[in-house]
Length: 236
Image 1 (tube, rainbow, N blue to C red):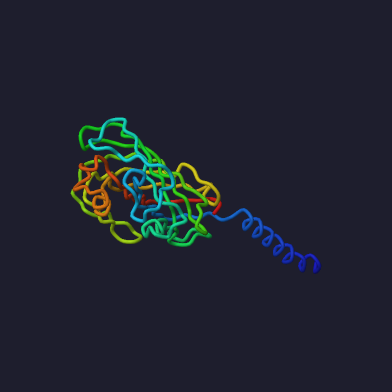
Image 2: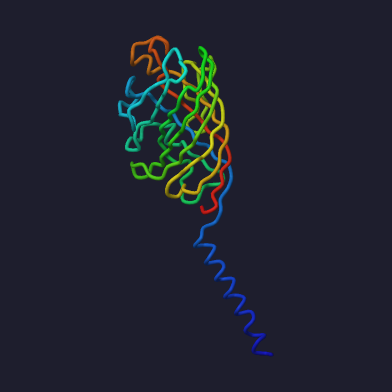
């Protein structure tokens, strides 16, 4: 009986250690709130503030807006440290394991006008966001969104990182977005929230192109956006 009494605590310690090691190797769940935001550009047609190319050829939302029009906005590449808004464009609370907070990201925002009449209507599409590490793009998060757009006279879009983006008004958009896929450490990331933003023209873009307004450009040259919501990752 004395031998059994001495061994029981040892067996219990070994079982606890085994369970701990198994849980550590499998990864622990993470959850909380997140913000994904950025300043995307139609740089192929109107240039970028830094003069650097966007990650992909872009195609802005045209003026006037027509049903079925496709649009594609992008940021410049991870190789350039210039864009202040995108360099602080991904926030997790609490911090996501292994990710600096805020994290540097780049985006490609694309979609279609699903219906529209003048300056009011709806859009749907995707936002593909890339984590920047060592000047190159790494793991990605893909978000699907649906939103309505409507005219706005607001001359700024408030982002959590880098402060407000100065704009010249345009079309505000508001709706919802959800994470539909990811790669690398974001492969199991889930979540979604409220998407807001603006199809607009930055004052510098108008000046650079010698135009007085977005209408004079014939398109909206920029699309700052923010997705704010909740996340869950069972294997983070």
